[in-house]
Length: 326
Ligand SMILES: Cc1cc2nc3c(=O)[nH]c(=O)nc-3n(C[C@H](O)[C@H](O)[C@H](O)COP(=O)(O)O)c2cc1C
Image (cartoon, rainbow, N blue to C red; front, top):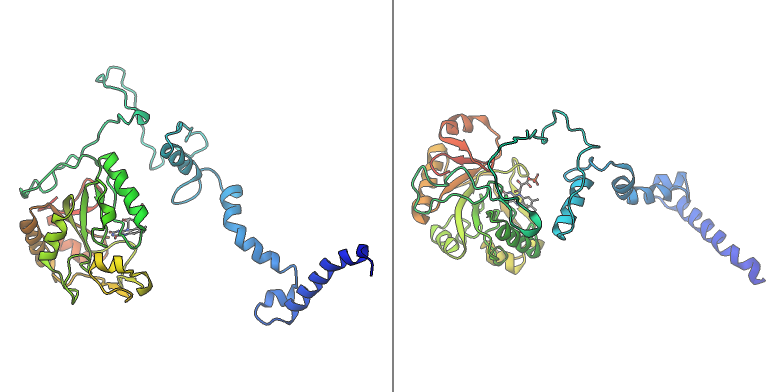
C-alpha cells in the first residue's frame, strides 16, 4: 500500500476501533447508544466549569467570590493598581452590601489613608474583650475585622502561615480553629485559641479535656483570648471526622491524637451538660488562664438559646460571645 493511502486510513481505523469499543462495552449506556459522539458529553462535562467561569458567567455572578472581587484581590496582593470600577454593572440599589455613604463637606480633617503605603486607618473594636468580667488579660482588639477559625490539618501549613503573617501585618486576630496551635500559627499574628468538642491540643490520651495541657498551649504562643466552639455551620448533627490518612505524625503531635487513625470531633462537648455547666466552664478557663473566654455557635436548637439568651450577647465580630467574657 502506498503512503498517500495509508495515512488517512489511520484516523479512520482509530474512529472505527473506538466505535466498536463503545458498542461492545457495557459500562456506559450513553456510549453504546451513541458510539464515538457520546465522548463529547464527557469532554464537555470536564471543561464545563471553566466554560461557565470564563465565558458564560458575568463579572459579578459567582460565589463565594465573583470575578470582580478576585481581580481586586489579585491586584491588591501584588501591590498593583487595584482601582477598578466595581460598580456600574452591579445591581446596587437598595441591596445588602452596598452601604450608602453621604458626603459631609465640613468633616474632621484627617490624613488620607493609602493602601499602597500601608498607612491605613485602624478600626479598633468598640468592646474590651474580657472587660465586663475584669479578666486579667482583658484587651481591646485593634481591628473589628478578624480571621475566623481555620484549623491546621484542614488547611495546609503554607496556608496557615500565610494567614498568620497577613494577620500580623493587618493587626488583626487570627483564630486557630479547633485543630490547636501549630508552628505555622507562630509568625507574628496574635491568636484566639479555639477549643472544639474534641479538645485537640488540650486533651489527655483518652480524649478528655486536660486543663494543664491547655495552660501549656496558651503559654506557648501569643494567645489573646479563648473561644469555645459549641458548633459551626459546616458540621451540624454528627460533628466531623478527620480520616486517618490525613492524620500525619505532625498533625497527631499537634492535636494530641494517634497518627493514622480516624479522629472524630463529636457533635457536643463532654465537659458540660447544660447552660450553667457551660458558664462554669467558661469561668474556670478564664480564671486559670486570665484570658477573655467567649463561645462560638451556629444557632441550632432554640431551647439552648432561650436559656442562654439573656446571658449572651453578639460580639463585635458578629459571633456570639458569652456576656461574662466578651
Ligand atoms: C478549611 C476550613 C477549615 C475551617 N476550620 C474551622 C475550625 O476549625 N473552626 C471553626 O469554628 N470554623 C472553621 N471553619 C469555618 C470558618 O471559620 C467560617 O466560619 C466558614 O468558612 C464560613 O465563612 P466563609 O463563608 O467566609 O467561608 C473552617 C472553614 C474552612 C473552609
